Length: 370
Image (cartoon, rainbow, N blue to C red):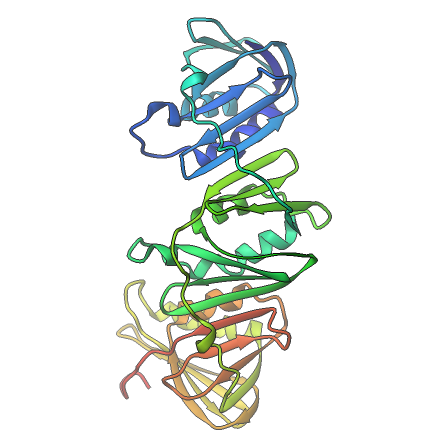
């Protein structure tokens, strides 16, 4: 095999597919990036058997062939070569020469025959969303997946398609994040759980164009994302997602309209007095036309008033400050609406059209906190 391509193109492709290279594996070939130049295109492929990524890069194939190169070594070589054309040549003994200007590296590759290509998945009618929309959906929900495997389903996100509506849900037992978007076409109704790792990696490699689309294909076991010259294939999580509809009540006793930036800034300042592992609540004392926010820890205490528009009852309620900040940071509106029932019931942050819904469970606090 012999091929030539610019450093920029090669590095771009390597940075995309390396997201699917496992950090630990008992199969050494999975630690590789496969370069497949056997069929008139230069394909870079990586696959950890749960997530697989393939991308096509521009370049010249002088001799077709296939070689698998250790991803860590190969990516570091490409990253540190001069900004010029790179030549990659391999022989029948898997010896691979990587040349750029006066630099020459010789490394030993592995047989491409041993590499696990992306699964051949049947594609039906795609669900299409813009790159920007998908990237935003992930940004606005991914923070509330569980970060451990105690409950596997909580490490993924629900993708529920109902005609021309897509609902994306994440939860970790303390909060729920929901995004609802309208699709341009009606699609087959489906309900699947996509691993959070897959969505995090897609978010990193998506260019985020508002004009270009991502085509999403869903089968019984896999989900495929296609955009530009890249294909991402992921296994789905098995199981039935949590029934959350009964938790999404529209009833409330207290409704608050508040400036998002002011609320976020205030909670952020309050956390200066809380060490990372110290679970001190932010207490919201809601009265008439203002909300007093208070926090108290062994370091000290802080309180601050914010003007609000309120309907309904006064209330004192406490929350994990991080959970509130996570939700507020991904909302783009200037003002947000908070809906509360009582100090032991969830708080909802939602817009009028339910394009986004954030449910946050309150925490107990004692008189010493208040």
